[in-house]
Image 1 (cartoon, helix red, strand yellow):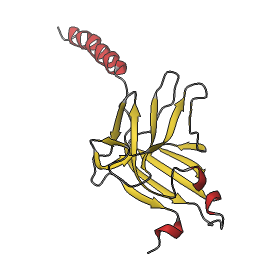
Image 2 (tube, rainbow, N blue to C red):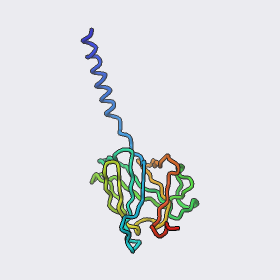
Image 3 (tube, rainbow, N blue to C red):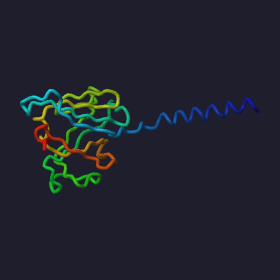
Image 4 (spheres, rainbow, N blue to C red):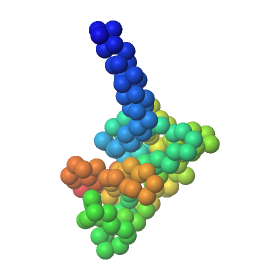
Length: 169
């Protein structure tokens, strides 16, 4: 009878391992985000380098068939009455978005605004101020799969960015 116990457990363990392997991995969520001007600051504000960084809950996987998208929802005019509203950020009216999308052909994250680099769980977009929707805006980082857009559950889940000259009191 003792010999049967390991033989009976082995098939169950194999089934459990196989079933666990079939579950899709959890989708990465945004855990931290920053938008900063790169130093040194150029005298030409439009040409200033701006770095937009997203740190995710896990390393994003850009594979064939993936539809993952990460980015920043932008309230360029800072008016609640204009733009699209999201239930997780009801005080903002989003007028634009900066996207970092999975390009299944190259298996890399790309953006129409500049170059994207990925280091483990961090995505960084390098662009210039002139390519952003505004030089002074409110923003909320997001993660999206298909039509589902997830903002951070932390409050407040948005921040303000402006070029150095506009952020001075």
